[in-house]
Image (cartoon, rainbow, N blue to C red; front, side, top):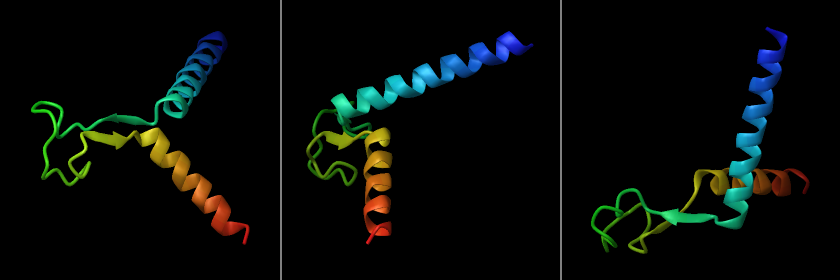
Length: 72
């Protein structure tokens, strides 16, 4: 049971660090609402650009702002 938990923790941390790295390298992804038909000028999620920030990037920006505002 112990090695199985250690393997699970190792895999979970590898996936998490991989996603963090992916979000730092490529913070913008295609809009899920606009993807089937291309750019939609009336899309509220991406403002018609077809690109929106990834969830990981949004969490990073939130944590950075929280830290910045908490230290003042």
